[in-house]
Amino acid sequence: MSSNDRLTRWVQEVARHCQPDRIHWCDGSKKEYDRLMVEMVARGSAIPLRKRPNSFLFRSHPSDVARVEDRTFISTPSRDDAGPTNNWVAPDELKATMWALYEGCMRGRTMYVIPFSMGPLESPMAKIGVEITDSPYVVCNMEIMTRVGTRVLQAIEEGADFIPCLHSVGAPLAPGQDDVPWPCAPMEQKYISHFPQENLIWSYGSGYGGNALLGKKCLALRIASAMARREGWMAEHMLILRLVSPEGRQYHIAAAFPSACGKTNLAMIQPTIPGWRAETLGDDIAWMKIGPDGRLYAINPESGFFGVAPGTSYKSNPAAMDTLCGNVIFTNCALTDDGDIWWEQMTDEPPAHLIDWRGEDWTPERDKPAAHPNARFTAPTSQCPLISSDWEKPEGVPIDIFIFGGRRATVVPLVHEAYDWDHGVFLGATAASETTAANIGAVGNLRRDPFAMKPFCGYNMGDYFQHWFDMGDRLGDKAPRIFYVNWFRKSPEGRWLWPGYGENSRVLKWMCERVDGKVEALDTPIGRMPRMDDLNLTGLDIPPEDLRELMRVDVEAWRAEANDIEKHFAQFGDRLPKRLERQLRQFQIRLG
Ligand code: GTP
Ligand code: SPV
Ligand code: MN
Image (spheres, rainbow, N blue to C red):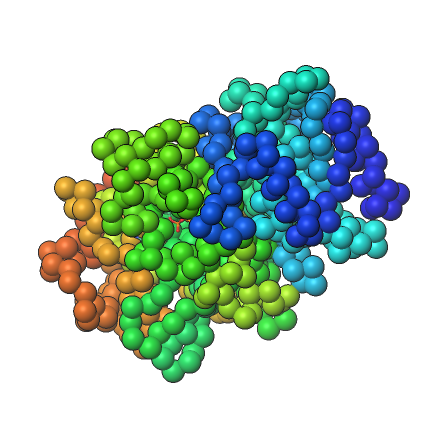
């Protein structure tokens, strides 16, 4: 059977179950996008923005505002292969449950077939997917976030493999029934399911972000991470950035921070240190493979930003603001009276009146935010003024530096460096962060989020740790150097101790100097840290006591961390690499 026959039969099978009124094969054209938007405006689910060309605001159902980790499943034949950090249901059982939900679920709707490529089609690292969805909102978002169109279909016709991705909002319409602006299913019917053995994705019940735009978290991270392990490459929740020194030397950095912990902002950094500049390559996902010269090369599989809106401003991230000049889909932002969008911290003063993300009148006296904390923009990567001319290079860029990190109000200092690769894997494996609004659930709870991949690793996390060791062994002395950062330290009163954003360039510069062997570092129990004099702080107005706090290693607090890491590691049983146990013992010895 040709892959084209396989595609036709799959589409027919899905149509037989889901019973859509009609089927539309997407060509990815502007005409198609425009027509879908016109239809969504007419139905009342999209609001055209008078102030931004070709831009639209959507308001989701208040129950469908973020990823749903509790409803996300890695369905491997054995529970052990999904591991302790994933939800698991046996494939047969999950498929039976979901087929029952899919039965008739697209009645009254159009079924769209979206052929898409993750990565430039001509890249040897690119992967093709086909998403079937009953949501025109998903189609338009996918057309920004991925490379959609007839060229992809052609590749399939010529024999290229593809990953089937099935999605339904789970809200069939009875004959004559009016649609709602944001159809979705109740929480207990939502399923974001992955079958890594078969490279298959089934999503039901949500129209939002990573639950529904299946090229992103589902394919490019969960399925891709499982493929990457089998095939000897890496699929990581990482931004990709090129930093250029005043002398013109280029450094490529890939950084893994959990959701809503600063990847997009770091990817678009505008360094405050004179002479240094940055170019954006990717803001969320990196696919990396060892090149012919033995170094690790990264591509960005996406073609759009699905970025956190609140907090984005001309002060914090001017490049993002410029990226949003037009051709943007805004979701759950507030609407201004003159037909533009607004969100918290976009301007110093909020507008006197807004329509909030729920569609209600809002004035600054209201104690609820006008935009949902996980409000997002979907914008083409090519519109970023800092985009690197190499961002679509088929072979990618060679990575010099890995950064891990997270949101920690206490304990973790501004920056430390791993002693070696194994210690770096330990830092990644033990990364912890306060939860954010990017997932439905409590916000601000500290949890381990290894390599920022807890919600996105498509197999047993213990095996994933081993994969990092294996990659390091293959890379040898060409492996990237590994650092750990925390931009989110707070004073007891809750004030940020570090100004963040563009000022983070000061920390990046120190990393580059470490890579070049230009500066010594201080050995501490947690890793190597900058000597105060080596951090360029010129022009920064930080009280000395704040700086001391940002660079302090509180041995007592780290002993408590070590105890918690023991518990964290214990859940992996015999899947935990011995090399991590050794790292933990050495850490405990250094702590004394
Ligand atoms: P996902 O798209 O969910 O993966 O998030 P992300 O990792 O790309 O996070 P993003 O850059 O969108 O930042 C999330 C929030 O953190 C935004 O509200 C930012 O304004 C804020 N933020 C980002 N960088 C910094 C920083 O250096 N300091 C402080 N204080 N806040 C930051
Ligand atoms: C994240 O949560 O890490 C995101 C947003 O990048 S979503 O696409 O919804 O997963
Ligand atoms: Mn993300």
